[in-house]
Every structure is written in structure tokens, then in C-alpha cells.
Length: 79
Image (cartoon, rainbow, N blue to C red; front, top):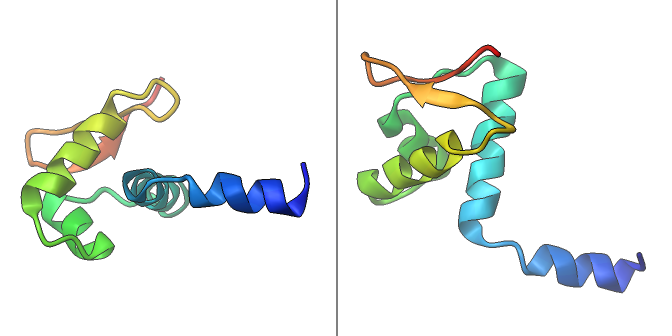
């Protein structure tokens, strides 16, 4: 893959994809267990429901199993 192809590929990444990657990276590397409000603040999102929708989408991915617990915190699920 050439540099130009990599640049085109990176420019096609959507904002939700980048935000999701940032959240997953922090959860996996720092054992972060955020609330939806903390995700909203971390990503600088204006809308709480947008942060919630993002986390719901991420929770559906088999590669990164996360779930919201009864306390409203998003946690990694152990296999």
C-alpha cells in the first residue's frame, strides 16, 4: 500500500469510527470503565444520547465485548 493509498483510506474513516477506537483503546489499555457521561466528556460530544448510541454500537461488536452494568458503567466482559 502506498502512502497516498493510506492517506485516502484514513480520510474515509468516519468520526464515529475514530471516537469508537479512542474509547476502546482507553478501555483496553487503561482499564477504563466509564459512564456514558464520561464518554461524552472524554470525546467532547455535545449530546449525551450520541455517546450512548456510540457505546451501544460498540457493545454489539464481538471483538470488543463490553456491556453496561446496573450502575450505568461500561465494562469489559471477560470471555
